[in-house]
Image (cartoon, rainbow, N blue to C red; front, side, top):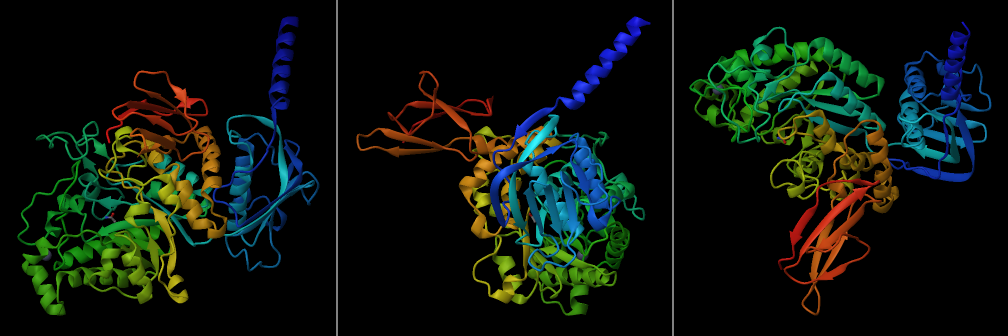
Length: 619
Ligand code: ACM
Ligand code: ZN
């Protein structure tokens, strides 16, 4: 009996110690991404502890945003006991009584002073973004370490976004990613105040959404033989009768679950259904939707289809019925303004040989095949307009003429976006040279395989300004914002989606939220260093490309070579050796003879970031 009592006491002491003896920390400075519009620091600190309460003002504790905030606070062992009135030692989340024009719908203010933290905004959305900033004010490892006291320096923040459209795209056709990974991406987006999730649900390599009326889209179009252990573009063809084990699709319940999860994070979900090209998955399931005379056998397969000749017949009424039927099932699942109808890279070869397409063109007096595509798109636009929706299309939709209501996603550079804004169409900028995060982020030799011959470094993303030059004030209003695109030909694991997005998504978020006058590469790269710790503590995989040395070799007057290293993430430590010498820490540019072999290795937070990189000084 005594023994049992003793054991119970020991357990109680252990529980008491676990609860009360968390770490204490004093935050020295805040590393916020995106950088707020205004932030002023003051002397003194407020101590956030388990006795700090929460006050939800007029919203009350059952407001969805307060529920989200409380559950996050609880994860970090802060007890969000709700106060009935504002009091000292309190986190207050308040909706402004009078609308603050400067903050708008998404802005917020944060005040940290001796009484606690006050986050205020005109809307729940603004409070949500204020809370994301507060999250970033906590220690980087708050999700892993139990803190009993966090000293937050006094500050005043005023913040609101530069652009309305702060997007991230995910291609789930080339590789399929499950519900939990999509949710993890939505969490990541919300940390960086991004608000549009563009979900690329259909393409040649798989149809990814349940459509009840056309079950073969899923039974056939969502599956292919597994070649994930072979390089994209060099995979063995499918064997006869080989099982199709790679793929999948989202059921309607799963779509609803994700849309709801996104809504809790103030993220709109924009589904993309590709019309009229990128449709091998449709054509394998329903070959009659191909052009007359097209005797290609389309299959859902691994590896590129190039040139992309698969195209839905523009002259077949049953194709238009099919597309409208699909939209009838899509629209109720996505309660937002936009449906993306694709429109990119549709080779029209099959149309040129198809009697049905020719007949349609003659009847409608269409001059060329671009106009036939345009007719299909406008038909779909009208149909969707009837259901209260607007379309977005890739910039090819401009080629055959476009309605003034369509929003253009400019990917083949900025040209399409500029032309569209001049015509009065809304535009989302996503030029391939800056916004394609499937491109390498550093020297290909040291990176996992990505799109060949491509390079978009963190710095390049950071230097991108989504507002193109040469537009008038009224044309500029049509640039809604920009987004990062993640095409997944070369990305076949959840970790790789994160590896390619991070840290470049941090740069895109700042491009889209922060005003130009607060952007600063030196500050940003040091913030990225701290965010890398935060992201890894939250189980995200951060790409190593930005830790790679950037190497410059210049001739010296005496015929030797001067080698200079630079790096993107502040805090990276580089070591190098010449020929078979010892590794030494890089402090400043150094001179070597032509023909020398130089090896480098980079460390970050005590961890080696990649294997040793050796190169020869040739020229
Ligand atoms: C695209 O990259 N084909 C939009
Ligand atoms: Zn046709």
